[in-house]
Picture 1 (spheres, one colour):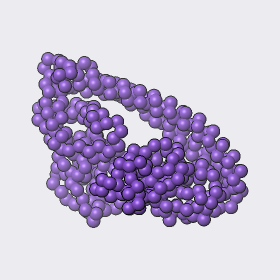
Picture 2 (tube, rainbow, N blue to C red):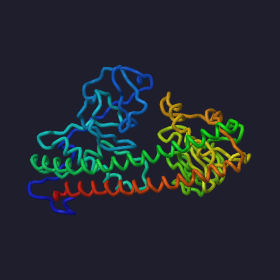
Picture 3 (cartoon, rainbow, N blue to C red):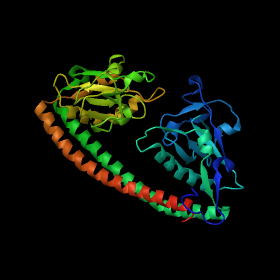
Picture 4 (cartoon, one colour):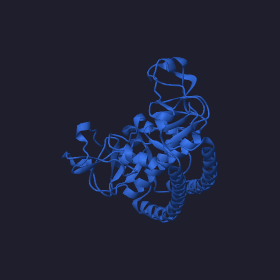
Amino acid sequence: MSELYELPDGWELKRLDTVSTFINGRAYKKDELLDSGKYPVLRVGNFFTNNNWYYSDLELPSDKYCDAGDLLYAWSASFGPRIWEGDKSIYHYHIWKVIPNFEFILKDYLYQFLSWDTEKIKSDKGTGTTMVHITKGSIEERIIPLPPLPEQQRIVSKLDLLFEKIDRSIALHVSNMNEADAFMGSVLNDVFGELEEKYELKILGDLTKTTSGGTPKRNEKSYWGGNIGWLKSGELNDGYITEVEEFITEDGLKKSSAKLFPKGTLLIAMYGATVGRLGILEFETTTNQAICGILNDKNQFETLYMFYFLRKIREKMLKDSFGGAQPNISQTYIKELELPLPPLQIQQKTVAYLDEISLKIEKIKQLQKEKMNSLKALKASILDSAFRGEL
């Protein structure tokens, strides 16, 4: 960092492990994770949401608990820092508790640095990276620009003032996007509600075939790097799928449970963080086992009609998906879904109407996203200035 710009007088460059301590959480066996208990178990999946908690009655050393106000850092998958605001909890192995050495550094200054440095790590890993893991050793050797404590306090106060205004604006754009989604949801409820009153309900499994994908063995190099697309559930985008990130070979297709889905196949994620997410293929590809392909082989429905129906009932599917170690909807569940089935001509008119509304809503959401991204870029620029000593 000092090679790129000159720090102000009184600032130093320090390794993180010289001004703070990173403490590992604890890994858990299945029988130690309970549906209810004395302590919540904070996992990475709960780090930024409140969904699907586990609990524990274990009594552990004090450093394996986090309390309100503690600085935590998730180092696997969705990684980065957070000031914990919840009740006393046990934090999982994939989370560190970060203890500042208050002789050298303020907790809020360290938090802001870790937030800024998280984006640097993501950038170093590459913009296409979807999953980032960092080691305790690699985070401890990160270099932090460290001013005297009074200057740290001035920087934190300034950042708090600026970020309060920016975060308020970001929250407004998020609210606008949520309202747009809610409006689309109400339209879908109205449309399919009317159709249910007029037309007989049909069972999805009677209208079509469904099947899931598969993953060739990762340790067989001859199965990977070919010219056959392989789609992961995280790549489903609630729209048309036009590209994939990974490819397999003919050998990988033949010697695994992977299946080649034709262009136009409707896909739905069956488990994990993306459960219920949809996609329609614009090309022929295989998928992983977390994706169910709904084949329109009998031509009894318009693919987009089925797409909008599944969007309409997604909230119910998400509620039904909880109960195990992770959200899960099975092929059996999907096959047993009931939907109103008007003649194809009525389906086509329904799709045209919903397409028109959906397009307008997506334009609104895209504008909100662009404004949000501009605000996030502004925050990043402010943090850059702060840790260059230029704020």
